[in-house]
Image (tube, rainbow, N blue to C red; front, side, top):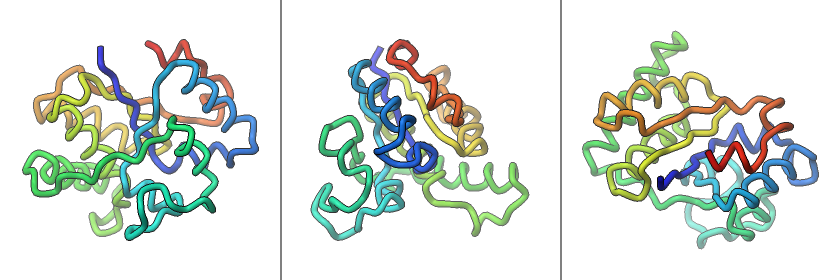
Length: 176
């Protein structure tokens, strides 16, 4: 099965930076499993990238090492003109707003980008299955609820990335 791992900003923030044991544990598990973490461009920007820069230009962001090593990959730009992508992102924003009792105007764009990227990868045949690693429970629930409604049944798995998850993550878990 062709599975892709999609990660949000919170995963890296929760790691605490490249010099921490949690970061190194995540790095080891990803590399040993032979997979990579895809991040939407919006997440890259939240981690310190600049919208007009060449790909992966900033050596000042702490995640640059993972990008340089190839286990963190900035995904291609989302296809906002694609009705599936824009539709599921709008639905995600509404879902998160309802789930958190917040205005849609106050929903982070990175959360909607995670679900949009998952849909785009599935629709384009770049993945058969998405494993969404996130600290954003409403975005994870939105992905598990909405992707099947858009025709991607049994193709999404959301994993909440807690401190404990990062301390115990192994390559075996990522290989399943």
